[in-house]
Length: 324
Image (cartoon, rainbow, N blue to C red; front, side, top):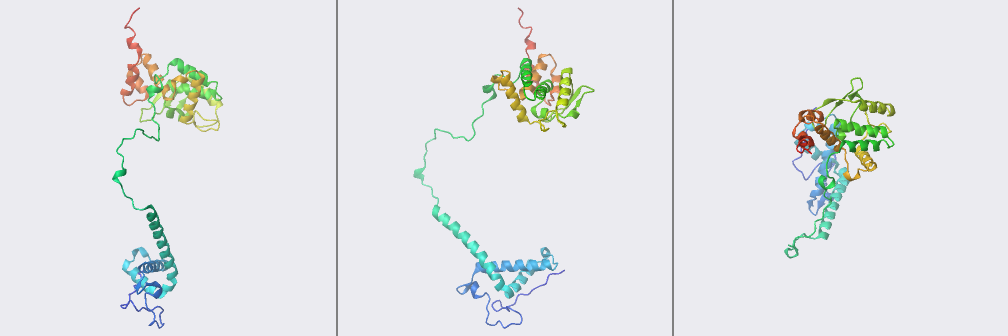
């Protein structure tokens, strides 16, 4: 449907305000829209804005697609509508002008109170400050917090025994055992599901994070018995390690549990964190004489450089240096 083309009269000062009426004494813009002898540009802009808005609403109601109309057509139609209905649009336009004027005056008053921003070179201090203010304190290096980043087998056993005295002793002790035996990160541990455990084949499917290589690990008899007891005592959930509300544990919850167990086992000085169990697994396998490639596959390292650190610190290669 084509838009109706309104033609603007040649004489813009004498417009027909009402069709069929004698408007020879009415001038446009009207006196209410003038500042002195000239039209008020702000008020005229507001009137044209509301006139175009009204034309678009009428055309949409009539089924005309306004987005396909030419701007010239809308401008001509708005001019014709404004000449006929300017008195109806005048209150809205005046309110819009008042709001804009009040905002401008508010900004002007605020800038006047603040005054101009000037820089006085005489007030600039060239002295270097002696103190440095920091919003976040520096974190100490790991070497300052603990003497080593791994646990021995005896320390892991002490942690598991301390965990058995917790309210959820079976769950906490099993978490420490599984994390140590399979070198799991905290994220991998809390994300374990029962469909990854095969009691029939005595295997555990390990999915690695950080683009690590997934693998299938064998489960020992101690691990199988601990997992069966955990499944009997835990609420129904697809996850292995859950809270009393059947929600999977978080990595932060596992870290806090390790801290409590370390206090109970007398290992508070080591400042134990969950990743130390993964390092403990790597060092235990290296001390047992397993080759680096096997340890790399077991821990899921994509780069063997991350595995060499365990074999470098293994004391087995220095065992025959001294004979007493």
